[in-house]
Image 1 (cartoon, rainbow, N blue to C red):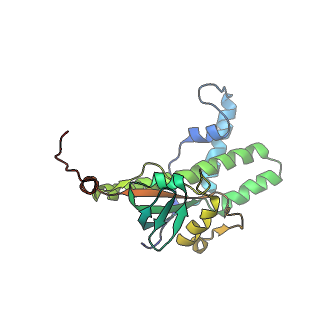
Image 2 (image 1 turned 135 degrees about the vertical axis):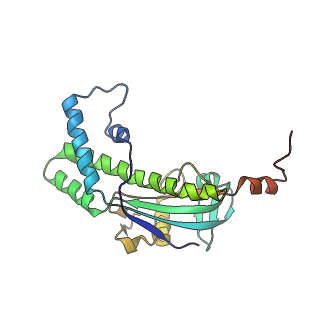
Image 3 (image 1 turned 30 degrees about the horizontal axis):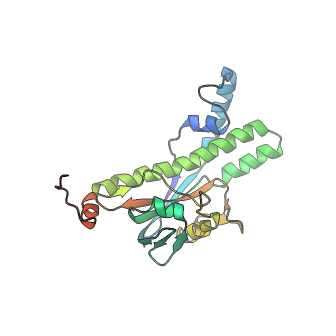
Length: 223
């Protein structure tokens, strides 16, 4: 199991269209007044300034993948058929977390308490997208050196609470990523605080030639 690594104060690129989608605006069918667009865009920019993105990750080996479970190095087991399918071709995993910090959460709460619900809604949607974009940035960062070593990072990731991967697994991510060291808390119901925090797992596949050898094939074989 590798050590935990961290990036702080990261400004991550994000797709503004994703924020509009979260707000319920359909790109091809929703008409928005130009002044409303300007106002929303201003609020999105403000949200970005409140977000202080921290990214945390750890590489860990995969000992075995069964039909309905994944066992990681160190004896940690995730019971999930969907996750097992997702990681079936992976030899290692990346556990990762992204958090936008407490300032944006405090500001959203302040807006709600002062009755500025429209602004709070935009801030909330924008902060969610920016937090997720942190994991996009991290995966892009990790992918480059892995490719140089002939390894493949999965194009997507898997989060606790998705499909049959129970939210209770959040506590395992919390411990392995040492999130308490970075001001992140977890509730008895496995919700992370600050709320704009997310965890996920991605897989790292073996070099293509190793997979071929294990499967009894040869790179020069022809049908």
